[in-house]
Amino acid sequence: MDTFSSSYPFYLLLPLLLLPLLLSMRKNRKGLPPGPPKLPIIGNLHQLGDLPHRSLWKLSEKYGPIMLLQFGRKPTLIISSAEIASEILKTHDLNFCHRPSLVGPKRLSYDCQDIIFGTYGEFWRELRRTCAVELFSLKRVQSFGFTVVCRVAFGKSYQGRDFDVGKFHDVVYEAMKMLGSFAAADFFPYYGWIIDVLSGFNSRLEKLFLSFDTFYQKVIDEHLDPERKKAEKEDIVDVLLGLQSHDQSGATRLTISQVKGILMVQCISCWSRDKFSNNGVDNDRARQKS
Image (tube, rainbow, N blue to C red; front, side):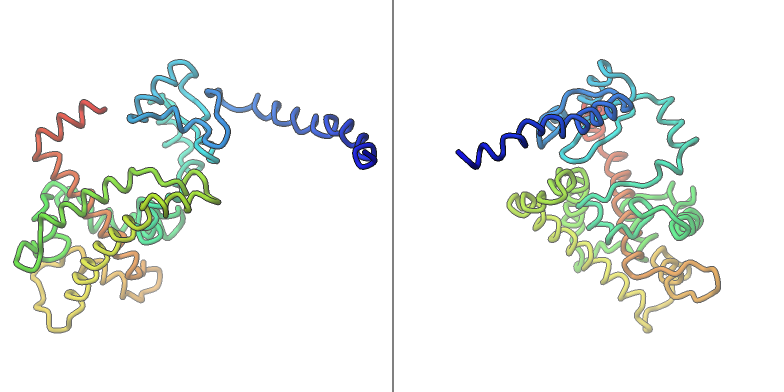
């Protein structure tokens, strides 16, 4: 009883102590874009549904083209207007050029060592210029099919007894799914990794990464073999390894991880293009989900 009596003034003052904080939160909310009410802990994650792009479009009809949603502990700005998106990506591109560090893409891109998930900066700009000239020229892209991709990128098609193309297709398809999968750590940074471990997400991701890494290391080792017959025309691995070994002033120098990260992007993007261009069923299914 004495303890409660001595604490009584504190309980009387507690609302006054919290009032400035509550007013500050309310004031800050007034300066933010509109958005739907959020639940404790999960925020607005429950409103995404099976087709997030459709769910967000429906929310934008009520809250407008600029919305603020809370995904776990991550506040996220949602743009549902082509005009506003164009202004953001063109006029204010430097303010919005960074990508969030997500668990799946970070691992599969060798800790964001590529041009898609890499951190914006001088090295990224130089790497982008190099890839635009050496890897993504119109002539190369127009010739991309899966077998051609392997020849252009790795120097040969790898459709022999030592390479299971069907299995590799499955691995790339799994990578596509993994890049779009839910990782709890992306939304709950402090404890989400526990959920990812228990759900098996981390083990699937690591197994997938090792499958790619083993293949890319084999390709790189073959290209670094001093007894390898020199090809008439350099493939993409030759170009990247050449950049990795250059020591000229101002030249881009790549690490092996960056070489693998670029190959990952090249392989997945070209496989996706080949898959959709040659499979009418998948095209129809994709259009139905869009």
